[in-house]
Image 1 (cartoon, rainbow, N blue to C red):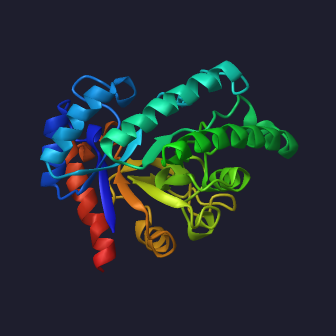
Image 2 (image 1 turned 135 degrees about the horizontal axis):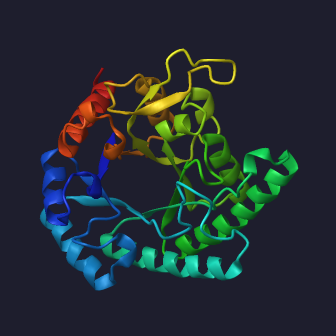
Amino acid sequence: MKFSVITDVLGTDSFEEALRIAKQLGFEYIDIRAKLDGSRLDMISLEQAADLKRKVDANGLKVSALTSWAINPCSFSGPPTYDNYDESFHIEMLAKLEHLSQLANVFNTQYLRTYSLSKPEGFDRLSDEDKEIHYQHNAKIMRRHAETAAKYNKILIIENEPPTLTGSAKELGIMIKLVNHPNLKVNWDIVNEWIGGGYASVDAYEHIKGHVDQVHLKGGFGKPDSADESHPYGKFLKVGIPGKDDFNHAAIMKEIVKHDPQVMMTFDPHYSSLDAADQLGEVEVIRQSKQFIESIFKA
């Protein structure tokens, strides 16, 4: 079982301090995204990356994945910030992906986490035929991205973010089947599945089984007495700490490890969204989360 942590969730703006904390917590792998001594990953040069990689090596860590906020940026509030059908935008994104792939060479990692295209406003009210048009276009663009990543021997991992056209395991599965490219894989955020109106059940996993190279870990609570025919596990209420929440982590995680043994389990706790009583400090939340998840596989 492999675990990683995103360095910018460890409560410090110092990259070197984050590396030290990650090592102290027993991690072998890290993900890199932001808080790189004042920079984001998308902003740094290859020379800056080489300096950061030396710090990673000095702490005895390995880079699991690089995460870009700049490629197909996800709008978590308000309408999408770009036009899915603007070819000049896609040319710009491919250039950013080329740079991200070059950074990955410096950091000696194969995995690049980016977003798929945004859901247009009113998407949920569209007919199935009109939704299919958007899914097909998303697949066309993501195939270009996968082909670009393949030139560098990199693998794209796409997350289920509700504002995107891959907002659920079902939609991730649609993308995987339409793109049909070995350099395109899935990062399944199991609580995002709940946030988006579904649930990370064994049945949901069937849509992406065999394609999950990363899982994002955080906790979640359901709304009391909210289970109904459409939501048999209840509706999502709020983020929590794994092990102190009421999401059934063990059932789905054991299933994933069984069928996707290559998976990297990555901690991304969404600390600022926790209730005040659960804001025990970023490091302590990661420590407790890791201990709980590890206990599932020791049982």
